[in-house]
Image 1: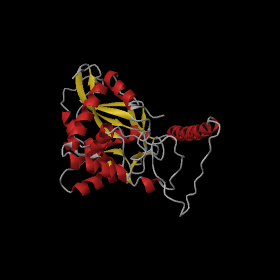
Image 2 (image 1 turned 60 degrees about the vertical axis):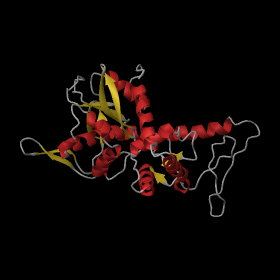
Image 3 (image 1 turned 90 degrees about the vertical axis):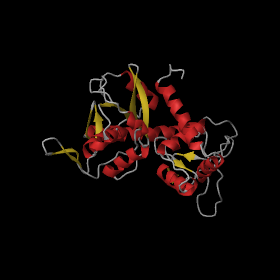
Length: 318
């Protein structure tokens, strides 16, 4: 099962050693290029393929401060992290969030990683040069990495078994949940079956709990944008007046209180642990908000930062 972000944040604040959910890195050094990125991407992918996880920067393996300031990560673009994962896997990844945790009264930047329903496979070798001039390989083409305790290692037969069981459990829970809805429905309720063939009519998305339940033939009919596509379309329409990244999308969702349960007009997920997809209505909302207030994105970012600080340091009053 995947691990919630709250659980990961709490673990990162208190743990004294690395685990299958937590990794420490003594420095944030993207300038080291291949060496830094190959090892960091390996851990990100391993966490995403397992149960999710969190990487805390500026901390040594034993859980003590490395003494190296890594605050530049807090100014790093989430999209650049995703780009590095795509570089080695050929796949887009959502669910990477740069945040901040407090350990022993000190703040450290961190990266939260959500679990993925389908594991990422490396499509490019992660090779880099080490001190003596020889080459070190972090991972090879075609390998799948999982988290084994405090290490990110190639998957085993047991990992595949756990992955399959996890997916079967999700499907079983979804089936049983749908059956339960029918069994527990009030007397007089009816099950609505819709025809997805051409000419069957349009479906209006609504949050009305009394509206009949229908299903779109394809999710893309009502929610044509994945996160990267939404970002590109917003930036295209704004045409240099401003630009957003994946961090901004999350900040906007929090500021506007948008989620798949309460805001079906804006966001949907084909499965509860899959990546979200967004509607044209959300695109229009974002553009309208910016047109009405050029500081809209800044306001959303500030709101998101304040809420993250409360999550990671709830005793703070500032």
